[in-house]
Length: 68
Image (cartoon, rainbow, N blue to C red; front, side, top):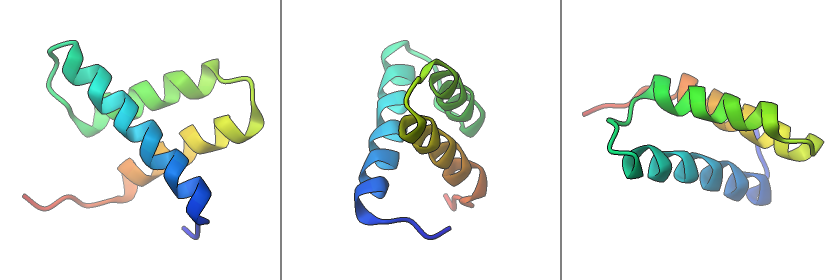
């Protein structure tokens, strides 16, 4: 996935936002929980660019293989 720097900042912000929200609720952070929350925000978003940012953020979480 090729992404420009400004969009990258928005994607990172979106992921960080949901991770902080999940942790603030006392829940365990998982890929599934992050993706679910990002998809929820994508559905609420009315701006086309914002929808794309949430879609891209969810795709990043789906595609990245984390190594402990």
